[in-house]
Length: 310
Image (cartoon, rainbow, N blue to C red; front, side):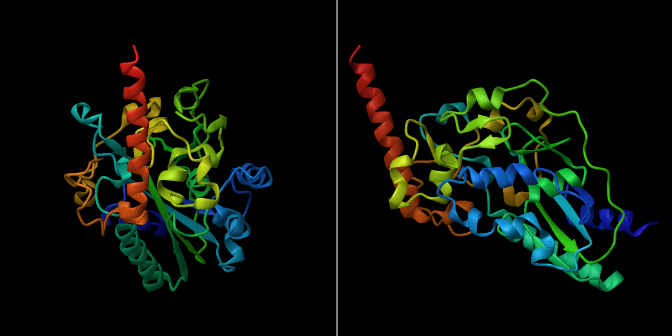
């Protein structure tokens, strides 16, 4: 049995739902789009993207001996927003349970150790916290495609996935890049985006994106005036995923860590004081969430005022 098949079986045994392999040699998909986003300053207030762009474009800039990239996928879909609670502040589904980074880190380390033990290979693990274009690598590894929403769309699980992987000096047989089907003529994500942050297919204006201001820059005083109003999202935003036809294939994740924690699916004053450690919500801290909730309360108050005028 080949080392590639053995590796995929091992990744599955760790709990990953899919795995693909890409060669470091050859062009990486969507490089030009990422470069153009930087030139057009569409990263907005996400200054770390500008700083780390050279590393993101070339894995060998920080791991010179890289030969292959192993990309793993984990489905995190655990259901829909309860309709009876729609008046409360929403948070993105990926944050309903416990933080996925520790789940990934432990298992990626296991893969790295496996490569070292079996083949004497050196490795560098990545998730979405490092300077790595994980969506492009997932595309090159044959796991799916990048949709018009700029979300990675897995051929089986749709958009509800976490991506991570391992760069290694081991020369592995690469999987064929994904070639279709894809979005076709569908523009539902573009049409549904509450703030029109998807300004063109595969093109996001970060300063218009709700997730930018509810996760990344909740307290960014220098440009807080740019934050979009008139929405109900206290942490992240799932709208482009909710309307995506590819998510009709969604499958429920049995992973216990990703199951909704009571009170975190929707934030309100009764559940806001719970301990957020171990949750993706901890990223903004309580002060950031409070800022987001105040914005939503002002929006709802304004809407109620307009309703009473009729």
